[in-house]
Image (cartoon, rainbow, N blue to C red; front, side, top):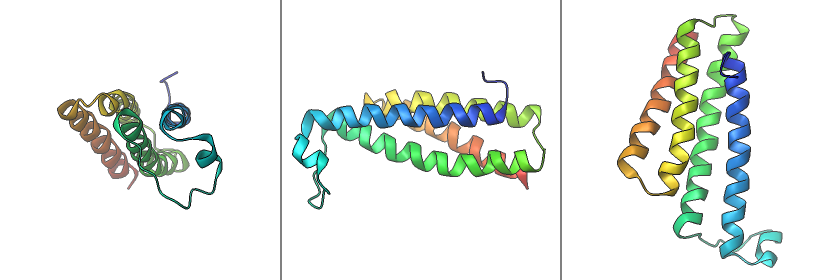
Length: 129
């Protein structure tokens, strides 16, 4: 399952979808259904774990927006290597660990795994150039 860069990209996409489900569930605990079904012109802030889930989701989407082009450039160039696979694996593991680290407030660990994922993304771009 972790055997190719494109599979890892797909797995991360699914992980982001699961994060959306978790974030939506968390939002339902604090916001009424009328607000959730509305156009949400009035901004309401989620607090506690639901707020951290919302911020983690925003971070996950940003990470996807940066990670996906690097993987796709390598795919188009047919430039996958054992190093690119290792970097994609590191990215995925770091991002999966990031979510609970953020939600449960493990700040030092959260920063470390964020850095691993971000560094892996930068390294993938360097390989793609």
